[in-house]
Image: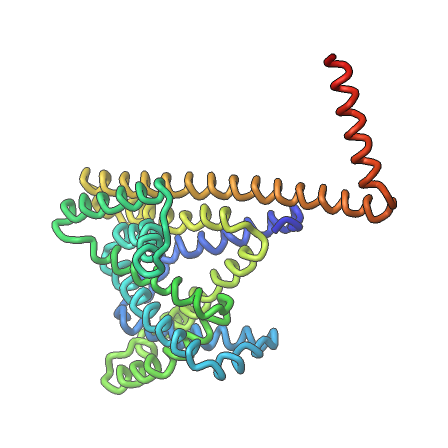
Length: 344
């Protein structure tokens, strides 16, 4: 990232805002697909996403990764796991939005970083810094407060957070780019989804062909809605530092939260405000700690590079001027003697 120009950084920022902005505004889209149910919408999303990303990859002729993936059974198995987990995430999110739980869904993506950290400790035996422990503790308290407020655990939020955190963990192990990963995962989802849609149509319950051309077009556009933010995200990821992307990720749940309150007019009693306030406090701690650690790492790296440059320069001088080391040593010895004389 050090060599990224200011223009590229600006482009990266615009792409990042576009990606997370679209993810934040997607609650406006799913209600447009009614009277289709959440499961039918989910199946269309799987089918049309593969159509869209496969066409895009054919256009740019980027298929070499597919052959490598097919020769690696372990990575293929991880892709299947990722596809299963993201299916749960997509399905719960679509159902939550169309059932009037936009605010609770937004909470899932607010607490996702905390869940990711907790999974790192439990599964990967990672060690946390004190501020990270504090953030996780405050986040747990927030879930307890919200459970009291809702009269039940916020299971929609927890399901979204844990499924997305698991998805991120598995994707990291697979090591594919965003569009390539989506292509592989939707290829796994495609046949079951298509089979479900055919079965739904055979029973007369499908809405794709019965609600008009506009409705059919909206269902088909689920592929674009799914893949387009990933394209923007990919353009941002190669131009922006991770710390900036980490801050931008909060745009999506903030937009979702505001839509839930201001557009969908969902209730926010005091106990829910208290729970969300604790979540935001935890995220503030987490962000502050991440930025502080990033600055320390950058300073340490700059110091190490400066030291390497000095050593390299000294080595170059010593190699270019025979006897330079001895001359330097004699000079230091003479200075030392002069100091002793002066002191006497």
